[in-house]
Length: 298
Image (cartoon, rainbow, N blue to C red; front, side, top):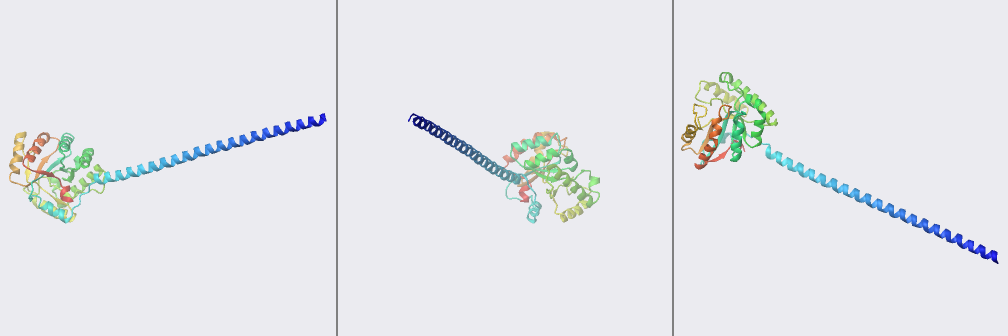
């Protein structure tokens, strides 16, 4: 009897021990499952966050690309010399409204052009710059600034040496093309073509008129037009004080609605910069609005 009781107690102990082991194993398995679930959930959240972050980055990148593209479209301006544009330039001095085209020849220069650009920027006026190729090669960063600030970049030949440029009509075209390449390199836009030249010394009133007349036909065959001026400050014909230059502007603009104003931004034309704000103020007082050749090439 006693032996049986001992065996029963031993059996109960073994059974209880097995139950404890089973419970421990079950708890251990449950813990492992919970830990695995927590790790899996955490990993899923991380993957979702990464996916969302990548999606946001892609969306932001696309927005930046779109914005950049829009800015590029706004910044990149390519003149378009249509038949309508040619006609508008041909009849530029005829207008029912008072319009002033500020034009600067012989630049760019490091001593004058940046200051001229500052004044134009302060007044939110877009001008037209007839550039010399040799100067473009010397100061490409100034050309790029002028272009990016919305000014029309036009062509004034390469050398400004009359005997050289007016040797033959083909020489005129050659100087034009050489300057075009310099401008394209400076603004880093190989598709840019000015389509517009101002002959050094003008198209009339000098001993090279016959060559220039032939050159005009040759240029037209290459979709290039030209423009002179009907108003000036006299900064290239001996006017050496500000009052005289402003008076010349008043005299040569008197009674005219549409004026193309000849000025210069070569290195020795600091007076042009010094009178520019006064000239702009005077023209505004006379009721002029300001345009550049992009307005004609649209």
